[in-house]
Length: 370
Image (cartoon, rainbow, N blue to C red):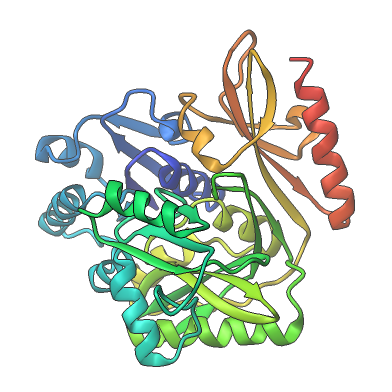
């Protein structure tokens, strides 16, 4: 199996890593010669994905094309190029359009009874402001009073945005895969955020109680059936006062959580969606195990070592896989002798949650000596 991956940043890193774990050959195309995924693939094509000649080279011999980018022009270009070559393009345009607009997805949540934070002005302060067309933590702001809201609106009023109730509580995520008719929810992961609301750590299995876990799955499958999802999307919730409140959905291959799910359960999401597209039917999604996994980002520069969100992994150049780096079982890192700055995703496997957290602390102390 040969997969062409369009986009070499964080989603591209996820796709290239999972492709290698599935035993697939991968080709990544990105215009940045130092794209993070450029050293994780079997072949890297440096070029603009709006250029058909570049895409022809990248798609040569491919069995499937995996978009790992959220740029509408590139998605259209890659989709047309894949269609011209008769290669499955693993992108659900309908679901992606809804999930990429928080306004549209919030409207859908209301129509199908999905619990979500109350919108402004029905809610009071504090509240969360989010650009409608961004995913993850991009542009997210916590607003605590009317003066901050007025200033934020002045600066961002020309763009579609969502204002909704701020709900404290632990964050969880789940991936759902489907073939347009059948769908299956995978493993729940627990998310931890840095001070700018960017995910810096993933742990699975989560501490979500069985009743809340079952409710989360039911909500996620309800969304999947409404979308008639083809491929994969993820759902993020806050557990507030023991209630699941859906924050957002994203109908594309996520970053971070699929690797944690793979190492915990043995289920490779990229393999699932590739097989589904090629066979026309979703394979069984049941997991064979549930091993403890902690997935953590660190960043090192002349000032020290910090635990930060995943954005740091896109800023330090090409990434490579290392086993045993800083005491982690697996690391994906830009580190090399004398490098500064550098970043690493450290993955710890097995044992208890407490043991994994302690191992991560020891890694940070070790990193300060590099």
